[in-house]
Length: 281
Image (cartoon, rainbow, N blue to C red; front, top):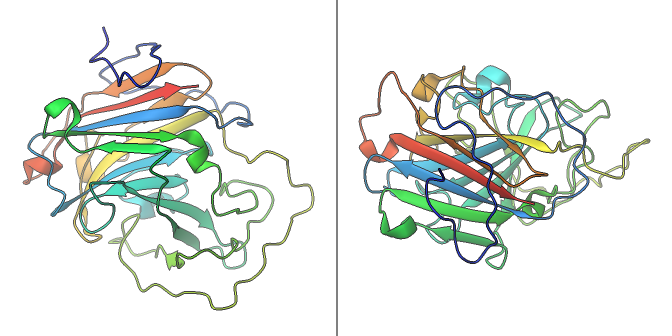
């Protein structure tokens, strides 16, 4: 049974999948040549949402490298392709902030870059979904994630070296390698006055190397780039075992999950009680 009806603004067609227990990640699928369609994310916590003291994070791996975990330094950030952030000094209650992650091919450092403001015409953020102050809903079109920084083959497992992206209005921020680093920790922004042009690698495929199966995780962090507080996995802020909410972007699907944590964060507004990803091709 579906948990609830989705917004009437969209045509509904769902395939219900397991609502509890670990999900099994399928084998990587073919490259995604079509990023049309949209997704809806439902994020529920154990108290009214606290956008002042908590950052709510929707992270996605589109490259087949793994699950985005809260202590991302343990996987060298490889499992992060994009992350939406809301609250805690990042995204607002109007729209989340979007970050894109990539590897600098020259130095091998993992880089995160704010993509800029999301287009209100292609996204919708409801901070109290269906009147529930404990839950928000976020809808976006998948083409918002169609490599907005123009990085040649941005997936970190690509066999062709990546390069510095085309200059944008947003500065580049280094992710760092300290065990205390989190996927979006505050750092000194260094704008590039004369950006390096993006070279065109030989053999560049016409499609970006994003797969048709995307792996999501929902997480909470202390405000201002503070430490992780919770995630969908049993280990909460230190979890490394959750197999992710895996979405087939070619089909109508609903992936939902009720966490079964071993411990809960002190702030109930950071305690994740439900997560859902709905995909509409």
